[in-house]
Image (cartoon, rainbow, N blue to C red):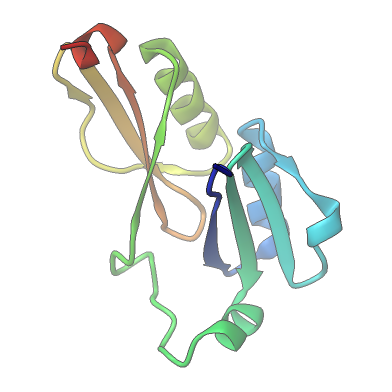
Length: 135
């Protein structure tokens, strides 16, 4: 069975600034699928974020584009390999201009923090102790 991929499409106010933000987090741009209106950000083997100018994004929907600094359109959650990696990625996001979103969640077996990117999209970074998943 082929592993399914997800392509997360997000509107960006300033595409160049958003590209710098995500590369500062350690993600790579796929230039083959990027142009002056779109940036393809490789999060992992099966997760790609497509950042679009609002004009390009509007080509894909008839709905009004949400102002993600004022309303919540989606919560994006990424798994992390450790608590330390959660903190590392969130600290990179904050240093690159992101902002804290919500409180740190520490339930012992699960740990998470969240940040808003430059356009207000909320990213939750979560680690779960693998032994907690075992029956």
